[in-house]
Image (cartoon, rainbow, N blue to C red):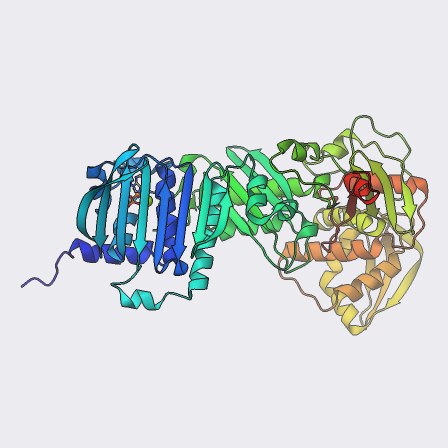
Length: 579
Ligand SMILES: Nc1ncnc2c1ncn2[C@@H]1O[C@H](COP(=O)(O)OP(=O)(O)O)[C@@H](O)[C@H]1O
Ligand SMILES: [Mg+2]
């Protein structure tokens, strides 16, 4: 008597269902993807009781004839691939031929489908067994209704969460679809109430506006970059707008929504030094990579992909996002009107927007106070402004705190301390990594007594202070003698900066080398920068402006505060009743 038996297909389907249909949201995802694969331009989704009582997805796609309608419920029945080789670069969402049979095996399912307006086929099944096939009528397209999900698998039903939380998961799924396919009209109702209605949108930003509102859409910067065969485009949140709540992160790879913590981390590292610890930016990014660089068949619900060269993909994402964060447009606006669906509105406020434009270098001599420093190591293109030279507009200092100037689209304010901090941070990070900071011997070496904590901080960072240009002898017993100091600008008070930096550094330990470098550069930059309250001479203001424009991330200081705020003419005109 053999002990091994091949399982009946209904049992096999139920087992597969465990992987494909975890919960109502996964059924919704599969049904919607089938509709999109059938070329739908409009989707109607109805949900009752968080999808537990009913999920109905209707589309205006190609529909199926009677024979296909019956076959669609059979395991491994698919119209999308014919052989294993077709998996490379497969463009349809589905290809495994498991979803419909899996869903059918754990529900009561009705499939009504027509290849042209008029006569349709109606297939009814329960627990995976076809009960009857009859004629019906319908416009071209398909409706799949799934009732009583998991009615025949009580163990699975027990794992369902409350209707509310199942509905939330469904809504997330549908929002993901709406972002991935902004060409499709989508209408969603939950328990008879309209939950999401979106028309085809010309841009991702417009789609975001119709899902979460125009104000939310305004928080984002456009990203669009190509590196080798990889393209990254989409929108990322302005660092200054990143808040504690409502973070939304979406990644599409070749049109397929995926969960990918690696890419999310790459995006976050692009924000490094523009966000306080713990804040995470929202973003929607679409990656286009060569079909043979990515394997989509590694997850039953196709929610994950495998990259052949993940490191390259992640670094590319990081670099392209950081380039977007480095544009003047990364600074927040006060009251700039948002106009849905006008791509021109974004184009007009593009890259060199805030720190304006280019052409001839202002030939004011640089007085050295904020001299842009040594050789830039950044690649050309990343610093278009620096490379081309900056026209410095007339600047006014307000409250010994802000620099103000006029721009095409409004008034721009720069926080002098934050701006200088950004300038010095990028310069210090360079010398902390590579050395080579100019330093000056003191005529009279200074003896500095340190508290035990500060002495520890010094010991932990002695090598980096040396690279910054400090020449310090450690006499033990918490006393050091400073022989030479860096000279980043004439107002710089080297000893005070040393003391304040050590006080700020004490108590923090970083194990990763880059984290230690960044932390030190940020701390020293903060202490070394001009303060609020410092009166700046006109040529100092110009030099600061020019140096800021030459940084990689001019719009943000190293604590995640904005360095630039823009007040739009629109807003002023509104306030003065001019419109
Ligand atoms: N909404 C639909 N419109 C047209 N055809 C559909 C629809 N849903 C399913 N089908 C057909 O049924 C087949 C089986 O669907 P499914 O089990 O999800 O497998 P897969 O999507 O992996 O091919 C599909 O290949 C497709 O031909
Ligand atoms: Mg499918």
